[in-house]
Length: 335
Image 1 (spheres, one colour):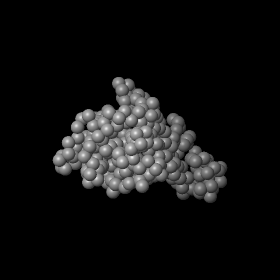
Image 2 (image 1 turned 135 degrees about the vertical axis):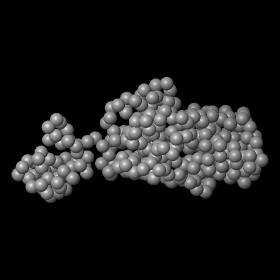
Image 3 (image 1 turned 30 degrees about the vertical axis):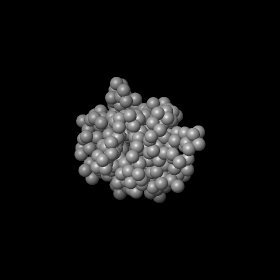
Image 4 (image 1 turned 180 degrees about the horizontal axis):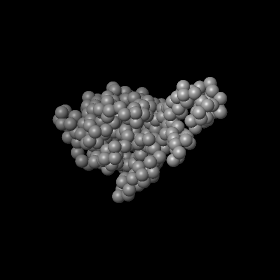
């Protein structure tokens, strides 16, 4: 907001606002107080040794996402961040999104952004087991919010899906639909959500007396084309599989497409493979592909919640009051 806009907001002249900000003696104390209060609310701060020059603070939030193979952002995460940006913008904040490789240089690259000091807080997306970025921010006492949890979840603010229940619900649903040969399309379990979903699947299988064999588990990345090719080969190698639990929305779409094309190629509509997408919103695309979807809040709404939590954390709200679990809804079918 410019000085002109502050003047309009307070119904004062631009000259009066400027003179109030620069502590001219001909401006009344009450007017100075109104101007300074509005300037602070809009993110202005004093700069300079003479403490008489006001500039607008950057008011920026940095979202850190792990670099995923050849893909910068998957569609669902993109929608989450769009919701975050919209909500932050309404509060006068900018959102910058940075992808960092999860290799040996991860922490050093992250340190560069911390030392730059041009953000009010961080959003960490897709947290991992023993995530070094979480450890670093906790040590420095920098405001941050995670989309996901880690082993130190009691110490920071986070928003997360009940991933254990997502996995448990997926396996239970398929078993109740008489599926006994179930495959799992996973991602690396260094991602905390994947570890929890796998745990839920395995526990549910034990409860119903079902054995999930290692050869029926496929690990993929986040690239849709590579995942499609891997799922197509996987299904050709294991024709006994009648259902797939996919731990990400990307793998669910890729697996469903591979299953559809395999069915058409073999002209075998009776052997239709059921596909469950964990954390996959039910929309027109998933419906047309016949994906069974685990429902939760829409991605844009999750993004808004993350933004509101970030602002609350900056204002000093306690972390224990900013820890939210989203319960998965009923499994719904796309047809």
